Image (tube, rainbow, N blue to C red; front, side, top):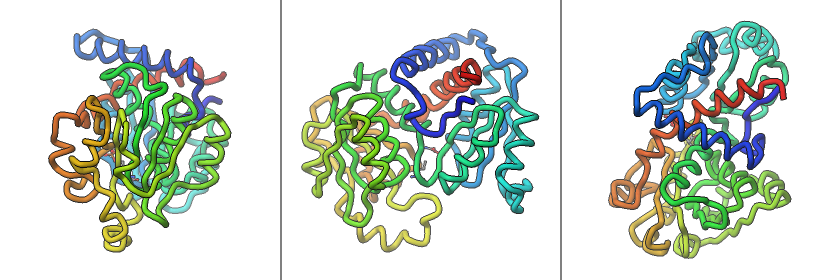
Amino acid sequence: MRHFLSLLDLHCDEVDALFALATTLKRDHYAGRPHRFLEGKTMAMIFDKASTRTRVSFEAGIFQLGGHALFLHADNTQLGRGEPLADSAKVLSRMVDLIMIRTFEHDSIIEFAKHSHVPVINALTDLLHPCQVLTDIFTYQEHRGSIKGKTVTWIGDGNNMLHSWINGAALFGYHLQVASPIGYQADEMLMRDAIGQGAKITFMADPLDAALGADLITTDVWASMGQEQEQEIREKAFVDYQVTAEVMARGNDDALFMHCLPAHRGEEVAAEVIDGSQSVVWDEAENRLHVQKALMVFLMQHAKD
Ligand code: CP
Ligand code: NVA
């Protein structure tokens, strides 16, 4: 069974095909041309955390493809009352054609996928956010062409977004320059695995150094979902890790700024950057729709590979 739990579940040539399909689907959507590749298909969407973009892009996306989505929140399913993941996976995958999960522990989605007879999509775990970074790379390439050999700078937390950018460095061949505060760095094992698979990553203490020569500068919130109680302590630790105009000026003249959103202006990013001319955050958000539509079609086509 073919799942999408990490960017590393895809091969480079598959990504090219997937991005080509996303471009076609985007054009079809703009032109109002029907593209009902998933007619009669149903997707269960399991959410243990909040969401705006992910829920709407998947739900609108499968509808536009001729299918249907079921929104299942932990608060009103038996999963939320302790039904084992394996049992839930076996039951749901007898009823639907695709399953999308946003949850806390990455091991939960691995366990779920192990028992699912249909493709499972990772819509964010504490460890990874592959749908977002796949979309970000598509968005970069839409604006600037191939990301291979380019320099991507990450300023901030060693979180799910950074981890997927690290995986992406192995798959897409960009050079990643990272500045995170001490104590908030990326997961070491994940990093070593990615480096073992060819990822080129440089870690720097100073965001101004990390931004030097960047083609893309990106960041994320200081406290992710599930870390709300750490907000205050993180505000102190991250105070020097804001993407400011000064940081952007260290990048190349045509460098882009991205943020997965939701953003906190005045924390991880200055308002003048996210609302400025180098920012492509709205394209990035919109492209979740087109890229995930392509991903759903791809997974349904390759379900049994
Ligand atoms: N970027 C992202 O995944 O947004 P949501 O939390 O709104 O889904
Ligand atoms: N790192 C953030 C991403 C939100 C889309 C979080 O996990 O809350």
